[in-house]
Amino acid sequence: MTAPVDDALILSVESSCDETGIAVTRGGRSILSNVVASQTALHAVSGGIVPEVAARAHLRWIVPVLDQALGDAAVTVDDVDAVAVTYGPGLAGSLLVGLNFAKTLAWVHDKPLVGVNHLEGHLYAAWLHDGANGGDTGEPVFPLVALIVSGGHTFLVEMPDHLTYRLLGQTVDDAAGEAFDKVGRLLGLAYPGGPAISRAAEAATRHDAAFPRAWLGDTYNFSFSGLKTAARRTIDVARADEGLPTGKAAEAEPAARLSAAATAELSWGFQDSIVDVLVTKTIRAAESSRARSIVLGGGVAANSALRTRLAGEAEALGLPLIVPRPALCTDNGAMIGAAGARRFAAGERADLSLDARPSLPLARR
Image 1 (cartoon, rainbow, N blue to C red):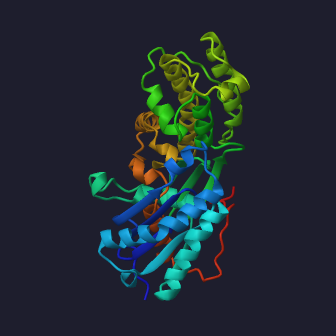
Image 2: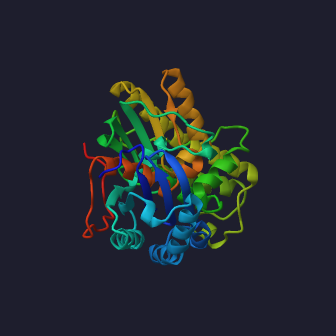
């Protein structure tokens, strides 16, 4: 007998990139446990994710993370109604670790297996609540427009009802998070670049660093590759003004960094360019779609400037903005449990032939 969505106890596994996440959720809303083993420090040395290293780290941490998730929730695998797992998109090796682990759990304990699209997980994080959220954050109202922004994905989608999507626009090249990481390295900031740029931008006082916007006409698509090129040139000019090496010579002398003041202004200008495009297109999409609420998700949704700007413009339209707390915006098992609960309630089941899909769209136009 299928448990209703309000009661289903879901054990969920997320390993699409560099975070090993396992959670226990109830009804796609309540978080009983949500454990994440982060690899940020591991990849900081290379300034980006090394796929083979990420997959090996998942193998190292997935059993301890499961043990802690079950312990925190005070349940066993036999207690859960289903096992949900991310099967794409993501890094092939990372996906295979979590997927095979989840399939083994489901087979050994005779539990239904539910495959979840990682992007759908970021959307359904908006339905989660727990004690750290200060209680219930309110439920998104349909129809809604969702902006998902992360290191690998940037897209706008219209959602008229649960599990129903219409793609409005997406990045045609680099995702916003990837652009943050690249420019963070150019500025000599720590990895990951997004949080580092956000912190540096807080010290800006002049707010006069200008960066271009790629509007791509009237479409809802995004492009950040040109912005990265412009940022490199702008940063080189600033370095030359301070008598520092530029271009490849700057890469050879990482200790020769811009002054804190220049770094702050450039960080603010770069961040403002990305936020401006993301927010403007999201608000325009919400107006055009006659949305009744807006959802913001993905790792870059933790950016305070993006959250503040979008909240202000959504309020001006009289629309509620639902944004998970920062820890639920980045990759985690609970978001897979939230989406998995909906798929489970809809009667969806996967068999043991479920395979990893490194390229897996959420929706097509």
